[in-house]
Image (cartoon, rainbow over all chains, first blue to last red; front, side, top):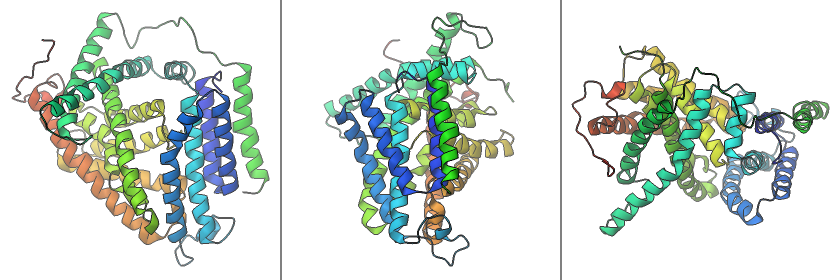
Length: 235
Length: 203
Protein backbone atom coordinates (compact mmCIF):
# COMPACT_ATOMS: atom_id res chain seq x y z
CA UNK A 1 0.00 0.00 0.00
CA UNK A 2 2.90 2.34 0.68
CA UNK A 3 4.09 2.25 -2.91
CA UNK A 4 0.73 3.25 -4.38
CA UNK A 5 0.29 6.72 -5.81
CA UNK A 6 -1.43 8.80 -3.05
CA UNK A 7 -3.92 10.48 -5.41
CA UNK A 8 -4.96 7.14 -6.92
CA UNK A 9 -5.15 5.54 -3.48
CA UNK A 10 -7.28 8.44 -2.25
CA UNK A 11 -9.78 8.18 -5.13
CA UNK A 12 -9.92 4.38 -4.87
CA UNK A 13 -10.60 4.37 -1.12
CA UNK A 14 -13.15 7.19 -1.42
CA UNK A 15 -15.05 5.05 -3.94
CA UNK A 16 -14.91 2.08 -1.56
CA UNK A 17 -16.30 4.33 1.21
CA UNK A 18 -19.14 5.54 -1.02
CA UNK A 19 -20.00 1.97 -2.04
CA UNK A 20 -20.15 0.96 1.63
CA UNK A 21 -22.28 4.02 2.45
CA UNK A 22 -24.74 2.95 -0.24
CA UNK A 23 -24.94 -0.72 0.81
CA UNK A 24 -25.72 -0.39 4.54
CA UNK A 25 -24.50 -3.93 4.97
CA UNK A 26 -22.70 -4.97 8.19
CA UNK A 27 -20.98 -7.90 6.47
CA UNK A 28 -19.39 -5.68 3.83
CA UNK A 29 -18.53 -3.06 6.47
CA UNK A 30 -16.82 -5.66 8.65
CA UNK A 31 -14.99 -7.14 5.67
CA UNK A 32 -13.71 -3.68 4.70
CA UNK A 33 -12.55 -3.04 8.26
CA UNK A 34 -10.75 -6.39 8.58
CA UNK A 35 -9.12 -6.03 5.16
CA UNK A 36 -7.97 -2.50 6.05
CA UNK A 37 -6.38 -3.77 9.26
CA UNK A 38 -4.63 -6.60 7.43
CA UNK A 39 -3.25 -4.21 4.81
CA UNK A 40 -2.13 -1.72 7.48
CA UNK A 41 -0.26 -4.42 9.40
CA UNK A 42 1.17 -5.86 6.18
CA UNK A 43 2.52 -2.38 5.39
CA UNK A 44 4.72 -2.53 8.46
CA UNK A 45 2.70 -0.38 10.88
CA UNK A 46 3.27 -1.49 14.48
CA UNK A 47 0.29 -3.39 15.98
CA UNK A 48 0.52 -1.25 19.13
CA UNK A 49 0.04 1.93 17.07
CA UNK A 50 -2.98 0.40 15.36
CA UNK A 51 -4.51 -0.72 18.66
CA UNK A 52 -4.08 2.71 20.23
CA UNK A 53 -5.74 4.35 17.22
CA UNK A 54 -8.59 1.85 17.28
CA UNK A 55 -9.47 2.39 20.93
CA UNK A 56 -11.46 5.63 20.38
CA UNK A 57 -12.94 4.15 17.21
CA UNK A 58 -14.18 1.12 19.16
CA UNK A 59 -15.81 3.43 21.72
CA UNK A 60 -17.47 5.46 18.97
CA UNK A 61 -18.69 2.24 17.32
CA UNK A 62 -20.13 1.04 20.63
CA UNK A 63 -21.92 4.36 21.02
CA UNK A 64 -23.38 4.08 17.52
CA UNK A 65 -24.47 0.52 18.23
CA UNK A 66 -26.57 1.60 21.21
CA UNK A 67 -27.95 4.60 19.31
CA UNK A 68 -28.93 2.42 16.37
CA UNK A 69 -30.33 -0.24 18.68
CA UNK A 70 -32.42 2.06 20.88
CA UNK A 71 -33.50 4.67 18.35
CA UNK A 72 -34.36 2.76 15.20
CA UNK A 73 -36.78 4.72 13.02
CA UNK A 74 -40.30 3.35 13.35
CA UNK A 75 -42.48 2.47 10.44
CA UNK A 76 -44.71 5.45 11.20
CA UNK A 77 -42.11 7.89 9.96
CA UNK A 78 -42.00 8.92 6.29
CA UNK A 79 -38.87 6.85 5.65
CA UNK A 80 -39.05 3.29 6.94
CA UNK A 81 -35.79 2.04 8.36
CA UNK A 82 -36.38 -1.45 7.03
CA UNK A 83 -36.23 -0.05 3.52
CA UNK A 84 -32.56 0.58 4.18
CA UNK A 85 -31.71 -2.61 6.00
CA UNK A 86 -31.43 -6.20 4.97
CA UNK A 87 -33.39 -7.14 8.10
CA UNK A 88 -35.92 -5.45 10.29
CA UNK A 89 -34.50 -5.67 13.79
CA UNK A 90 -33.16 -3.07 16.17
CA UNK A 91 -30.14 -5.28 16.72
CA UNK A 92 -29.29 -5.32 13.06
CA UNK A 93 -29.62 -1.55 12.85
CA UNK A 94 -27.23 -1.22 15.80
CA UNK A 95 -24.72 -3.59 14.23
CA UNK A 96 -24.97 -1.78 10.88
CA UNK A 97 -24.33 1.60 12.52
CA UNK A 98 -21.39 0.28 14.53
CA UNK A 99 -19.77 -1.63 11.66
CA UNK A 100 -20.04 1.47 9.51
CA UNK A 101 -17.96 3.47 12.02
CA UNK A 102 -15.33 0.72 12.00
CA UNK A 103 -15.25 0.48 8.20
CA UNK A 104 -14.87 4.25 7.66
CA UNK A 105 -12.18 4.51 10.30
CA UNK A 106 -10.34 1.47 8.93
CA UNK A 107 -10.23 2.95 5.43
CA UNK A 108 -9.23 6.37 6.79
CA UNK A 109 -6.36 4.90 8.77
CA UNK A 110 -5.35 2.67 5.86
CA UNK A 111 -4.77 5.82 3.85
CA UNK A 112 -3.20 7.91 6.63
CA UNK A 113 -0.84 5.24 7.96
CA UNK A 114 0.44 4.11 4.58
CA UNK A 115 0.87 7.51 2.92
CA UNK A 116 3.72 9.98 3.22
CA UNK A 117 2.24 13.44 3.87
CA UNK A 118 4.59 15.40 1.65
CA UNK A 119 4.27 12.83 -1.12
CA UNK A 120 0.48 13.12 -0.83
CA UNK A 121 0.41 16.88 -1.32
CA UNK A 122 2.84 16.62 -4.24
CA UNK A 123 0.70 13.90 -5.76
CA UNK A 124 -2.50 15.94 -5.36
CA UNK A 125 -0.69 18.86 -6.98
CA UNK A 126 0.38 16.74 -9.92
CA UNK A 127 -2.55 14.34 -10.46
CA UNK A 128 -5.48 16.54 -9.32
CA UNK A 129 -3.94 19.75 -10.68
CA UNK A 130 -4.22 21.33 -7.24
CA UNK A 131 -3.04 24.94 -7.76
CA UNK A 132 0.55 25.27 -6.61
CA UNK A 133 -0.27 28.15 -4.31
CA UNK A 134 -2.42 25.73 -2.28
CA UNK A 135 -0.01 22.82 -2.56
CA UNK A 136 2.97 24.83 -1.37
CA UNK A 137 0.86 26.81 1.07
CA UNK A 138 -0.31 23.56 2.63
CA UNK A 139 3.23 22.20 2.77
CA UNK A 140 4.48 25.44 4.33
CA UNK A 141 1.71 25.41 6.93
CA UNK A 142 2.31 21.74 7.65
CA UNK A 143 5.97 22.59 8.27
CA UNK A 144 4.89 25.05 10.95
CA UNK A 145 2.97 22.40 12.87
CA UNK A 146 5.92 21.27 15.07
CA UNK A 147 6.45 24.92 16.06
CA UNK A 148 2.81 25.17 17.06
CA UNK A 149 3.11 22.08 19.22
CA UNK A 150 6.26 23.50 20.82
CA UNK A 151 4.59 26.88 21.41
CA UNK A 152 1.62 25.17 23.02
CA UNK A 153 3.89 23.21 25.38
CA UNK A 154 5.91 26.34 26.26
CA UNK A 155 2.78 28.32 27.14
CA UNK A 156 1.45 25.42 29.21
CA UNK A 157 4.79 25.13 31.03
CA UNK A 158 4.78 28.87 31.70
CA UNK A 159 1.38 28.61 33.38
CA UNK A 160 2.49 25.58 35.38
CA UNK A 161 5.59 27.46 36.57
CA UNK A 162 3.27 30.12 37.96
CA UNK A 163 1.16 27.49 39.68
CA UNK A 164 -1.80 28.06 37.38
CA UNK A 165 -3.66 25.02 36.10
CA UNK A 166 -5.17 25.40 32.63
CA UNK A 167 -7.26 22.83 30.82
CA UNK A 168 -5.96 21.62 27.43
CA UNK A 169 -8.21 23.83 25.26
CA UNK A 170 -8.19 26.87 27.53
CA UNK A 171 -8.35 30.27 25.76
CA UNK A 172 -5.28 31.20 27.82
CA UNK A 173 -3.36 28.56 25.87
CA UNK A 174 -5.00 29.01 22.49
CA UNK A 175 -4.91 32.83 22.31
CA UNK A 176 -1.08 33.09 22.26
CA UNK A 177 -0.99 30.20 19.81
CA UNK A 178 -3.39 32.01 17.49
CA UNK A 179 -1.36 35.24 17.68
CA UNK A 180 1.84 33.32 16.93
CA UNK A 181 0.19 31.48 14.06
CA UNK A 182 -0.83 34.73 12.40
CA UNK A 183 2.75 35.98 12.78
CA UNK A 184 4.10 32.80 11.25
CA UNK A 185 1.71 33.04 8.33
CA UNK A 186 2.90 36.61 7.61
CA UNK A 187 6.55 35.61 7.91
CA UNK A 188 6.07 32.54 5.75
CA UNK A 189 4.39 34.42 2.92
CA UNK A 190 7.10 37.10 2.96
CA UNK A 191 9.80 34.41 3.02
CA UNK A 192 8.21 32.51 0.14
CA UNK A 193 7.86 35.62 -1.99
CA UNK A 194 11.40 36.74 -1.21
CA UNK A 195 12.65 33.32 -2.37
CA UNK A 196 10.92 33.86 -5.69
CA UNK A 197 7.73 31.87 -5.15
CA UNK A 198 4.91 32.95 -7.41
CA UNK A 199 1.51 31.37 -7.77
CA UNK A 200 1.53 32.05 -11.51
CA UNK A 201 5.07 30.98 -12.40
CA UNK A 202 5.54 27.53 -13.91
CA UNK A 203 7.60 25.18 -11.74
CA UNK A 204 9.43 21.98 -12.41
CA UNK A 205 9.62 18.99 -10.03
CA UNK A 206 12.87 17.38 -9.01
CA UNK A 207 11.00 14.11 -8.44
CA UNK A 208 7.68 14.06 -10.31
CA UNK A 209 5.00 11.84 -8.76
CA UNK A 210 3.86 9.39 -11.42
CA UNK A 211 1.01 6.93 -11.88
CA UNK A 212 2.20 3.34 -12.42
CA UNK A 213 0.47 0.18 -13.64
CA UNK A 214 -0.12 -0.99 -10.05
CA UNK A 215 -2.01 2.26 -9.37
CA UNK A 216 -4.28 1.66 -12.34
CA UNK A 217 -4.93 -1.92 -11.21
CA UNK A 218 -5.82 -0.74 -7.71
CA UNK A 219 -8.11 1.92 -9.17
CA UNK A 220 -9.85 -0.62 -11.39
CA UNK A 221 -10.32 -3.03 -8.49
CA UNK A 222 -11.83 -0.38 -6.22
CA UNK A 223 -13.67 1.82 -8.72
CA UNK A 224 -14.98 -0.76 -11.20
CA UNK A 225 -14.91 -4.30 -9.81
CA UNK A 226 -16.12 -3.46 -6.29
CA UNK A 227 -19.10 -1.29 -7.37
CA UNK A 228 -20.04 -3.93 -9.95
CA UNK A 229 -19.86 -6.66 -7.29
CA UNK A 230 -22.04 -4.50 -5.06
CA UNK A 231 -24.65 -4.08 -7.79
CA UNK A 232 -24.55 -7.77 -8.76
CA UNK A 233 -24.99 -8.93 -5.18
CA UNK A 234 -28.23 -7.02 -5.14
CA UNK A 235 -27.79 -4.05 -2.81
CA UNK B 1 -14.23 47.65 -0.18
CA UNK B 2 -10.66 46.34 -0.38
CA UNK B 3 -9.44 44.29 -3.34
CA UNK B 4 -10.98 40.84 -3.67
CA UNK B 5 -8.15 38.85 -5.30
CA UNK B 6 -6.38 36.40 -3.04
CA UNK B 7 -2.76 37.07 -2.19
CA UNK B 8 -0.15 34.56 -1.08
CA UNK B 9 -0.45 35.79 2.50
CA UNK B 10 -4.19 35.04 2.42
CA UNK B 11 -3.57 31.47 1.28
CA UNK B 12 -0.86 30.92 3.90
CA UNK B 13 -3.15 32.39 6.56
CA UNK B 14 -5.93 30.01 5.50
CA UNK B 15 -3.54 27.05 5.55
CA UNK B 16 -2.10 27.98 8.95
CA UNK B 17 -5.57 28.45 10.43
CA UNK B 18 -6.43 25.12 8.86
CA UNK B 19 -3.53 23.51 10.71
CA UNK B 20 -4.41 25.20 14.03
CA UNK B 21 -8.03 24.17 13.84
CA UNK B 22 -7.27 20.67 12.58
CA UNK B 23 -5.22 20.22 15.77
CA UNK B 24 -8.09 21.68 17.81
CA UNK B 25 -10.55 19.34 16.07
CA UNK B 26 -8.44 16.32 16.96
CA UNK B 27 -8.24 17.42 20.61
CA UNK B 28 -11.94 18.24 20.78
CA UNK B 29 -12.76 14.85 19.26
CA UNK B 30 -11.24 13.19 22.32
CA UNK B 31 -13.43 15.35 24.59
CA UNK B 32 -16.47 14.54 22.51
CA UNK B 33 -15.62 10.87 22.71
CA UNK B 34 -15.47 11.00 26.49
CA UNK B 35 -18.97 12.58 26.69
CA UNK B 36 -20.19 10.21 24.01
CA UNK B 37 -18.95 7.16 25.94
CA UNK B 38 -20.72 8.37 29.07
CA UNK B 39 -23.97 8.69 27.09
CA UNK B 40 -23.56 5.33 25.31
CA UNK B 41 -25.73 3.20 27.64
CA UNK B 42 -28.67 5.53 27.01
CA UNK B 43 -28.24 5.35 23.24
CA UNK B 44 -27.45 9.06 23.18
CA UNK B 45 -23.77 8.81 22.25
CA UNK B 46 -24.24 11.08 19.24
CA UNK B 47 -24.97 14.02 21.52
CA UNK B 48 -21.40 13.84 22.83
CA UNK B 49 -20.24 15.08 19.45
CA UNK B 50 -23.23 17.32 18.75
CA UNK B 51 -22.35 19.51 21.76
CA UNK B 52 -18.96 20.32 20.25
CA UNK B 53 -19.90 20.13 16.58
CA UNK B 54 -19.61 23.90 16.14
CA UNK B 55 -15.84 23.67 16.61
CA UNK B 56 -15.66 22.09 13.15
CA UNK B 57 -17.02 25.30 11.58
CA UNK B 58 -14.63 27.67 13.35
CA UNK B 59 -11.81 27.66 10.79
CA UNK B 60 -14.13 28.83 8.01
CA UNK B 61 -15.84 31.59 9.95
CA UNK B 62 -12.69 32.93 11.65
CA UNK B 63 -10.66 32.99 8.41
CA UNK B 64 -13.53 34.67 6.55
CA UNK B 65 -13.93 37.21 9.38
CA UNK B 66 -10.22 38.09 9.25
CA UNK B 67 -9.62 38.12 5.49
CA UNK B 68 -13.14 39.08 4.26
CA UNK B 69 -12.85 37.95 0.65
CA UNK B 70 -15.06 35.63 -1.41
CA UNK B 71 -14.19 31.94 -1.22
CA UNK B 72 -12.18 32.16 1.99
CA UNK B 73 -14.65 30.21 4.15
CA UNK B 74 -14.96 27.39 1.65
CA UNK B 75 -11.26 26.99 0.93
CA UNK B 76 -10.19 27.31 4.58
CA UNK B 77 -12.59 24.57 5.63
CA UNK B 78 -11.29 22.36 2.83
CA UNK B 79 -7.68 23.05 3.79
CA UNK B 80 -8.46 22.26 7.43
CA UNK B 81 -10.04 18.98 6.39
CA UNK B 82 -7.02 18.19 4.16
CA UNK B 83 -4.78 18.75 7.18
CA UNK B 84 -7.05 16.46 9.22
CA UNK B 85 -6.53 13.86 6.53
CA UNK B 86 -2.77 14.39 6.78
CA UNK B 87 -2.91 13.95 10.53
CA UNK B 88 -4.88 10.71 10.33
CA UNK B 89 -8.54 10.90 11.02
CA UNK B 90 -10.96 8.31 12.32
CA UNK B 91 -13.87 9.74 10.34
CA UNK B 92 -12.57 8.31 7.10
CA UNK B 93 -11.38 9.71 3.79
CA UNK B 94 -14.53 11.64 3.08
CA UNK B 95 -13.34 14.25 5.58
CA UNK B 96 -12.33 16.36 2.56
CA UNK B 97 -15.87 16.09 1.20
CA UNK B 98 -17.30 17.10 4.58
CA UNK B 99 -14.92 20.07 4.58
CA UNK B 100 -16.33 21.12 1.24
CA UNK B 101 -19.95 20.76 2.39
CA UNK B 102 -19.38 22.65 5.65
CA UNK B 103 -17.37 25.36 3.94
CA UNK B 104 -20.06 25.75 1.28
CA UNK B 105 -22.70 26.35 3.96
CA UNK B 106 -20.66 29.16 5.51
CA UNK B 107 -19.69 30.61 2.14
CA UNK B 108 -23.32 30.86 1.00
CA UNK B 109 -24.24 32.92 4.06
CA UNK B 110 -21.33 35.33 3.64
CA UNK B 111 -22.15 35.62 -0.08
CA UNK B 112 -25.80 36.31 0.77
CA UNK B 113 -24.56 39.24 2.86
CA UNK B 114 -22.41 40.22 -0.17
CA UNK B 115 -19.30 39.94 2.00
CA UNK B 116 -20.22 43.18 3.74
CA UNK B 117 -21.78 42.11 7.04
CA UNK B 118 -19.20 40.81 9.48
CA UNK B 119 -20.93 40.49 12.80
CA UNK B 120 -22.12 37.86 15.24
CA UNK B 121 -25.35 37.34 13.28
CA UNK B 122 -23.69 36.60 9.93
CA UNK B 123 -21.09 34.38 11.56
CA UNK B 124 -23.70 32.48 13.56
CA UNK B 125 -25.83 31.98 10.46
CA UNK B 126 -22.73 30.75 8.60
CA UNK B 127 -22.20 28.13 11.30
CA UNK B 128 -25.88 27.17 11.33
CA UNK B 129 -26.04 26.66 7.55
CA UNK B 130 -22.83 24.62 7.70
CA UNK B 131 -24.50 22.51 10.39
CA UNK B 132 -27.64 22.06 8.31
CA UNK B 133 -25.67 21.11 5.19
CA UNK B 134 -23.51 18.53 6.91
CA UNK B 135 -26.52 17.08 8.71
CA UNK B 136 -28.24 16.40 5.37
CA UNK B 137 -25.08 14.63 4.18
CA UNK B 138 -24.88 12.55 7.37
CA UNK B 139 -28.45 11.34 6.91
CA UNK B 140 -27.00 9.26 4.10
CA UNK B 141 -23.32 8.86 4.96
CA UNK B 142 -23.78 7.95 8.62
CA UNK B 143 -27.09 6.22 7.99
CA UNK B 144 -28.89 8.66 10.29
CA UNK B 145 -31.97 8.18 8.14
CA UNK B 146 -32.62 4.92 9.96
CA UNK B 147 -32.74 6.64 13.36
CA UNK B 148 -35.81 7.96 15.14
CA UNK B 149 -36.90 11.42 13.91
CA UNK B 150 -37.21 12.72 17.49
CA UNK B 151 -33.58 11.86 18.15
CA UNK B 152 -32.49 13.50 14.89
CA UNK B 153 -34.43 16.68 15.70
CA UNK B 154 -32.74 16.82 19.11
CA UNK B 155 -29.34 16.33 17.53
CA UNK B 156 -29.98 19.08 14.99
CA UNK B 157 -31.08 21.57 17.66
CA UNK B 158 -27.98 20.90 19.77
CA UNK B 159 -25.81 21.20 16.66
CA UNK B 160 -27.34 24.59 15.79
CA UNK B 161 -26.70 25.85 19.32
CA UNK B 162 -23.12 24.58 19.18
CA UNK B 163 -22.59 26.25 15.79
CA UNK B 164 -23.87 29.55 17.15
CA UNK B 165 -21.66 29.40 20.24
CA UNK B 166 -18.43 28.32 18.54
CA UNK B 167 -18.54 29.87 15.09
CA UNK B 168 -20.70 32.86 15.96
CA UNK B 169 -19.79 34.02 19.44
CA UNK B 170 -16.33 32.54 20.08
CA UNK B 171 -14.97 33.23 16.58
CA UNK B 172 -16.20 36.82 16.74
CA UNK B 173 -14.52 37.34 20.09
CA UNK B 174 -11.33 35.60 18.90
CA UNK B 175 -11.22 37.71 15.73
CA UNK B 176 -11.77 40.94 17.65
CA UNK B 177 -9.13 39.89 20.16
CA UNK B 178 -6.64 39.28 17.36
CA UNK B 179 -7.47 42.67 15.82
CA UNK B 180 -6.75 44.37 19.13
CA UNK B 181 -3.28 42.81 19.30
CA UNK B 182 -2.40 44.33 15.94
CA UNK B 183 -1.16 41.09 14.35
CA UNK B 184 -3.89 41.16 11.69
CA UNK B 185 -3.38 44.79 10.73
CA UNK B 186 -2.49 43.70 7.18
CA UNK B 187 -5.90 42.06 6.71
CA UNK B 188 -9.35 43.54 6.23
CA UNK B 189 -10.32 43.00 9.87
CA UNK B 190 -7.38 45.10 11.02
CA UNK B 191 -8.09 48.02 8.70
CA UNK B 192 -9.02 51.04 10.75
CA UNK B 193 -8.71 49.19 14.05
CA UNK B 194 -6.97 51.13 16.76
CA UNK B 195 -4.74 48.24 17.76
CA UNK B 196 -2.00 47.81 20.28
CA UNK B 197 1.19 45.95 19.49
CA UNK B 198 2.45 42.72 20.99
CA UNK B 199 6.17 42.23 20.66
CA UNK B 200 7.60 38.85 19.91
CA UNK B 201 10.50 37.45 21.90
CA UNK B 202 12.62 37.63 18.71
CA UNK B 203 12.04 41.37 18.34
